[in-house]
Amino acid sequence: MADLLTDAEFDMFRKVIYDKSGITFSATNRSILDSRLKEKLREKQLGSLEEYYRLIMSNEEEMKTMLDSVTTNLTRFFRNQPHFDALINYVIPHVLENKKKTGETTVRIWSAGCSTGEEPYTIAMILQDILPPPFKFQITASDISLKSLMVGQQGFYPESRISGIPQKYLDRYFTKTDKGYQVTSQLMSTIKFDYHNLRNDSGARNLDVVFCRNVLIYFDEAAQKATIDRFWNSMAPHSYLFIGHSESLFGMDTKFEFLKTDWACLYQKNL
Picture 1 (cartoon, rainbow, N blue to C red):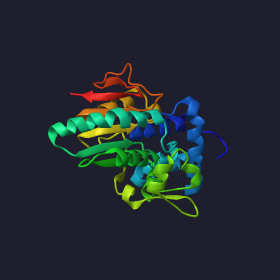
Picture 2 (cartoon, rainbow, N blue to C red):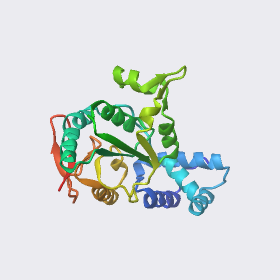
Picture 3 (cartoon, one colour):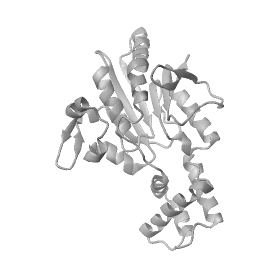
Picture 4 (spheres, rainbow, N blue to C red):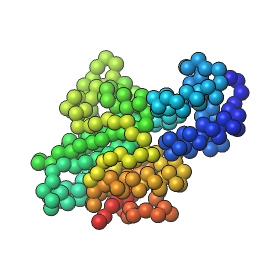
């Protein structure tokens, strides 16, 4: 157990992780994979990585648990505020303008790689605040981490996690308890949390906005391209894609158009 992954074991696990999730482990983050796998051996009381490999290959739930354990879940409420400023001041007005032409009243949003739920709850608070009647919204929040999704579904956050939420939203959409803050049931009802692996088609169609921030950085070029193409297929003719500020589609053969607003840069599907 003291030895690091052998080269053969490293190649074996990084291949199955890539094949199943698109997440790439390189030599620079090999130690992360090593420590996560050793934790799994202790937890399962197994004597070798070969045993653990056989377990995940024969048990789909164990495979999901393993993929969960090797992902990084870093998020916070109102993370990268300029994106939400662009959502409020540019994206939603344009989405509503197009919907008025069709008579449709539902704004559909996907928070892909939502981690513990801070991003979809941020979007929900904003939309609850700015959408005029008769418009309503639906948010799907997905992740490959079942543990993270459970936190989002429960909607409870300790005090250390609620920094960045404007006071008006905190007062309106959270109930303070002895141990932290509980999202109101009304806001929780606007979000559907769902397990989803971005390697696969989500089945969603006609989405108006997709957030997939700080996820593509874990994928290699081929997996990024496949994911972006699946987003394109899931989105409405006039729709918008937010990716992380350190991520870019430049150089990628994609149909999305780069869009620079006064608040932030994003991408649009414009048919």
